[in-house]
Image 1 (cartoon, one colour):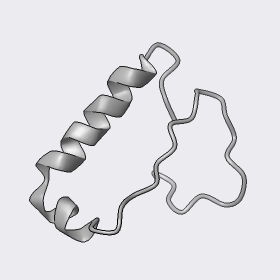
Image 2: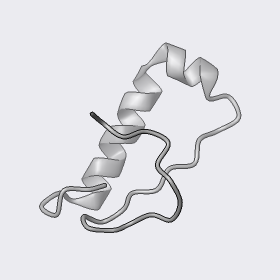
Image 3: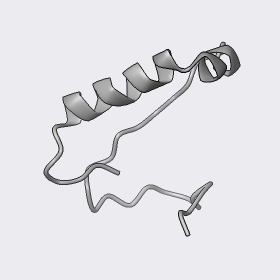
Image 4: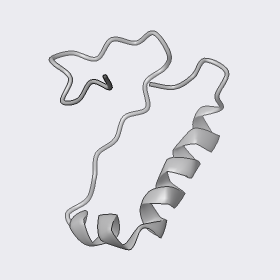
Length: 53
């Protein structure tokens, strides 16, 4: 979920750079990773896999 004030392209680039910089994540994600950047207030379908508590 993006902050309404965040620039989507900048946020996506930051996530991609952090994933690429982490050797462990890169090794585990050899088959790829599907990500979706949702605008603030969007409600994705289904149940969340993780909820920050």
